[in-house]
Image (tube, rainbow, N blue to C red; front, side, top):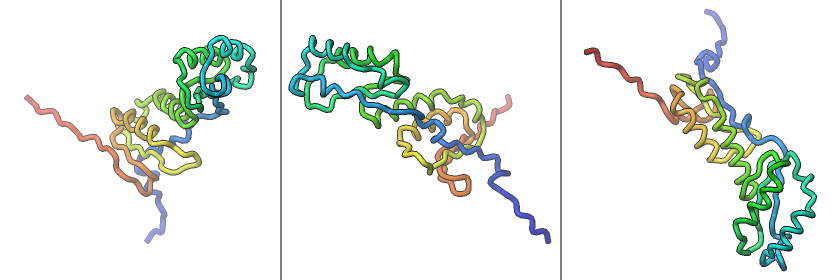
Length: 175
């Protein structure tokens, strides 16, 4: 009797997709409008515009930036737009929200850019554990992306998966 050890997972044709590959790489910064408010309560347009002109924007260069206001104040929409107009030419990406929302936005954008046709009629396992805290938004985005192409989608590791989706084979009736 042969004692040959075979790797059944490798022979199964299952493709492992590790979402951490698409996790935002680079520095993340927060641009908070709170310090630009008068008494941290209200925004004065003239003062705000002057303060933005005097801001050292180079510290946001080539970073992912989330614009937010941590003060409990009513901020006019144009104030966020004005900050974005300064940040956009130098930052990698500018979004409204907190750090978590920034990560989700970038992550979802990266997943949207995946060529899902590479997974056409393949059995795909979306890796469940890793070094990054991957949000449910990323798992939902990759499922929606792959469902149109993959033969099956599973969650976990190739040796222990949770089935998520399986394409039902359709047969054509002959006339």
